[in-house]
Length: 166
Image 1 (tube, rainbow, N blue to C red):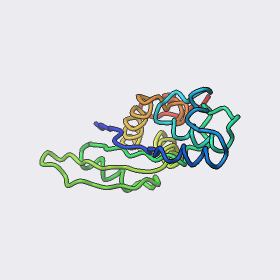
Image 2 (cartoon, rainbow, N blue to C red):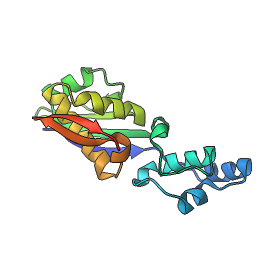
Image 3 (cartoon, rainbow, N blue to C red):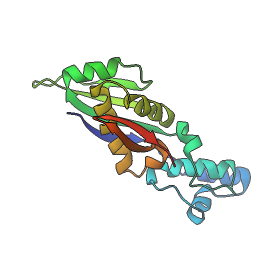
Image 4 (cartoon, helix red, strand yellow):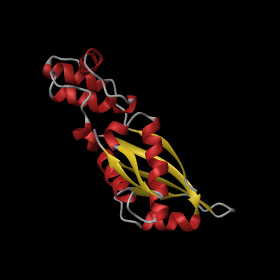
């Protein structure tokens, strides 16, 4: 059994809005607030970047900028399952805590949005442990209204899944 928690994400300093306004005469935060916004609050940083790039754009459509956001997830599971997960080439950085007394491992997985999207996509067709890891991590993104960026989970039988995009 896997348990995952989203523990950190990119943030933006207020200076960004000030500098953006000085450069292009438009305040990115005001553009996003008066425009369509992403469903998930954690994706607002990407909307601000998109408003900076093109003040007249649809600031809710930020999937192409997913690589500019960073997410860290803490995952806990039995040690034998975690060994398989961290040795799978998924492109995420891993930081392991010492194994617990009861054979539980905790690892911090970190990467940009594109790395996460790729890792979750490939996990869906991997081993059962990898699939369960992917589902636990995806659930955290879904809980934060980021399914439109990472895809909706479509079961394929057992624990296999595909990620569907709008």
